[in-house]
Length: 138
Image (cartoon, rainbow, N blue to C red; front, side, top):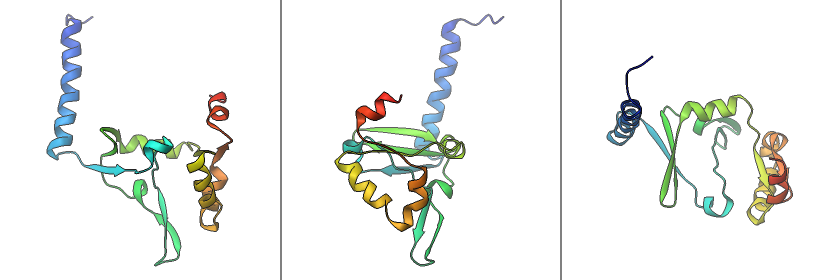
């Protein structure tokens, strides 16, 4: 049993968080920064793992698939969400299912999903008729 008080334990835990932020801000940790103009309307973040390259006329790893950054930072208007890259890779590895909710923006995205080049992504994507339909599945 430890003789340390709750304050001592909390202080040490908080200090480790401060050190991580300091490392992020001073450059001893690498961060890939992403911004999404449509985030506020869609409430979605897009994380690219592969891209169709016209030069080679084929899909190839990109974004999360090739980054060497330790963290990804998503700038969301006046705040920033910072996630360890390995956490994002794990979500992809376990097969997290992409979702699409048919809103005005979702309908436009669905048109893009219907393109030949996105056929594999569409097969994995769960599509919901509305936000209410999606929420009822949670």
